[in-house]
Length: 243
Image 1 (cartoon, one colour):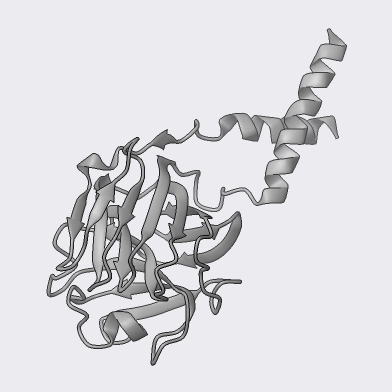
Image 2 (image 1 turned 45 degrees about the horizontal axis):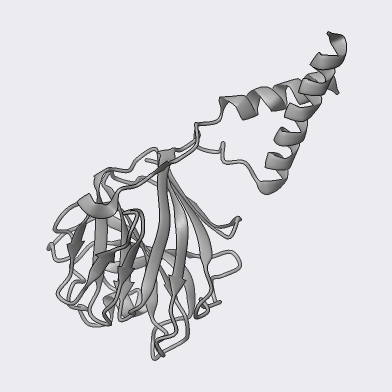
């Protein structure tokens, strides 16, 4: 038992250091109708307009990193898309042949657009809507998976959700409120982290941090975190007794 707890504590000690706040003042906005307003403290941003697809992306490539924070939509009477882009390169929102990952979450069913959280691969321009592609996840927006518990559940006005995005060359994980919603394997190109809105205003991304992600498959489940912490305390207690 002591040996198991020792290795658990060692694993905890080997995890990456605490994440660093991200300064969003260097990030870039794309889209024909957008207004990304960086908030005091520089690690939160509010997108205020209802319009065509828009992204707000970072300054460095994201492979091997983890992006975390919170997301919240104010009560503006709309029910459309908020989310993220991964592996995004400057100009890809309108490029003829882009290749990046789109994670979007819709509040309610509408025409051919489905409620819920989904992940898709984008291979064509979506800046001005491109028909139903970003709305219905068809054509140049190929849906890959939906959330484990939020795949057909919409976000709620004025509710703050925590998120963690893990981006690897062969795996992507999306966690919401500590629950792993998406875990897919594949081949993913390097590029920037970014935020995404489509036809949805009053979206606040706050407390944004970035960190080096643990090795693929090394993201602890909540129960594992508890075991690691307990093991760390157990080992500390045992060492004090031995002294």
